[in-house]
Image 1 (cartoon, rainbow over the protein chains, first blue to last red):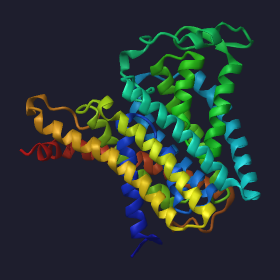
Image 2 (image 1 turned 90 degrees about the vertical axis):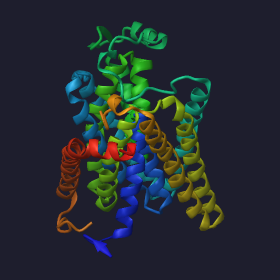
Image 3 (image 1 turned 90 degrees about the horizontal axis):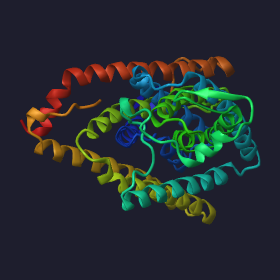
Length: 343
Length: 50
C-alpha cells in the first residue's frame, strides 16, 4: 500500500522512529538528530541524502522548540546573528568537504568513522558522569529564573580576558572577542554541514564553557541559531535534491508528539535515574555504525540489519524506560498532585 | 514523496521543500498543543487507571 507515492510501511517506521527520538529529545533536552543520520546511513541511503534529510529534520524540530521557548526571553539576538554568520560558513565548507569525499568514494566511510568517534566519546562522557552522579551535560530544558545562577567557568574567564578587537558585549554583562564567537560558530557549523547534526550538543556547552554565556541564554540563543543553521543547511542540500520528504515528514510528525510525551515525563521521573541508559544508547549507536562499516568492509550484508536493529533497539529501550517509569510514577501519584502532561 | 514538486528544480525546489517542513512544524506545534489541552487529562486519567 502506498501513501502519496511512498510505501505505508516506510511511513509507519519513520513515524515510529521519530516518536522514539522525540521522547528522548523531550526528556533529555538533547536533539536526537545525531541518531537520525546514522540510522539513515545504516538503512542504505546515500550520505548526502542522510545528511540533508537529517538537517531538514533538525530544522523542523528546532522550529517547534523555539516556538516553545520564544516567550522566555532567553535569546541574545546579536550573539545569535553572529553565530548564524559563523555557522553558515562552517556548513558550506562542511558540505563542500562531504561532496568531495563523496566524489572520491570515501564519504560513507569518513562520515561513519566521524560518527563512531563522536557518539562514542559523548556516550562515554554521559555514561561516566551519570555513574559518577554528575549532570553529564547541559540540558535544553532550563528554568526561566536560572539566568546568572551559573558562575562563568574559569576557561571562559581566561578567554574573556584576552582583548582581541573587536570586542562585543553579550547579555549577562560581559564582553568577548568577536573572533572567539565566530570560531566556535564556524567549528560547530562545520560539524553540522559534514554530519547533518544540529550541533547543539556541542555548541551549547561551547558557548557556556568557552565563551562564558550564561546557560539559559546559551540554550535560547542555540535554539534560535539552530532554526537558521538547520534551515540553511537543509536548503543547500535540497538544491541538489538531497532532502527526502518521505523521510522528514513522518519523522517530524512522530518526534513532535514524542517530544511532548518526553517533556511531560520530566515532571514525573528524575532524569538522573535514566541518564546512564542514555549514555549507553549513544555508545550502542557508535557500535551500530561500526558494525555496518565492518559489514561493508567484509561484504557481510546481514551486519547492516544487525546494525539497524542495534540503533532502533537502543532508542526503543531508553524511550521505553522513560515511558514505563513515567506510567509507574503516575500510578503512584495522587490525582490531586497531578503533573502536567507536557510543559 | 509526490506532492506536486516533481516539476520544480534547484533553488525553487529547495525553497518549496524547506517551506513545507516549516509549515509542517508550525501545524504540528499548534495541532499537538490543541490535542494535549483537550485530551491530555483524559489520557493521564486512563494511564492512572481511573
